[in-house]
Length: 368
Image 1: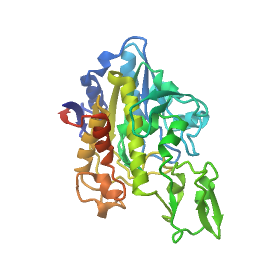
Image 2: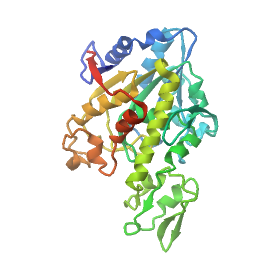
Image 3: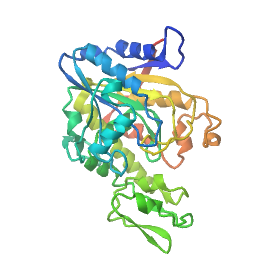
Image 4: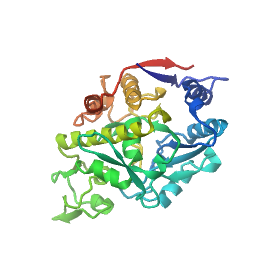
């Protein structure tokens, strides 16, 4: 049985969220495993430019302070993106981190892009996957002595939801690793909805989209499956690929997450922030109204059980009436399955059990 620590959003004078979060970290016991002079990575997502849904930098500050109290040195890190934007290379990524408050002045730790200036710094880690045999993981992450994952739990247009599993898989992969995971998830054009606005053409990082008779056309020989055109389209003309393609994508994501877990084993700790639970990931250059009310913070050493526990609690949370997805939410076992009906996000857990014999059983321990 995997123990998952939990603290809710209730706070009062003398017992603030900051104090509750610090108690949760200390009671986990992970700090006691950190040795003096170790380099401890704090893996997070600094948020795309124009997105304000990412984790508050003060949570990273608290983690950094506790790591320093152990005599170790923390550093903030993330990998560069496959798509173009404010995090596509190490220089822009570092600037975005500073703009969003993930800097030494605020957090007390430096931000270092884990896969280098152009996303080319990676090492291969062997795994018994169905699709992936060697995961291409960022060298800067693998060189850490220990790692703490800070995960914003929210929706995702291809994986269904994003949490610890997503922050490990896509979040720890080099650009080549991201391309490998996305290679099966090529978008398709709904020509009836296409108005020829050229937004997809403008954002495609590899020039795979052209315009013919005022309609978008995708060259699949060039397409890397990054999904940026889907995110940019305002007319639902860019759609995700087939359900089989999506299934393979989710399985690849699971395989990459397992590679990271097996590499670090007991030297990794995972924290899920189930607050500001937006329908889309923090890679979008915007953030929508949350789907449900805030739940709290979850933490544990098994990322698969952690995501399952967080998903169960989030799915039971009250829907936000102002959400554009309000009518879809009925309090089922998987909130994101209701929002993204074409994505079978439960297959993340099903595949993890089937392929890697992962345990999802958990018990909650509440920290007040």
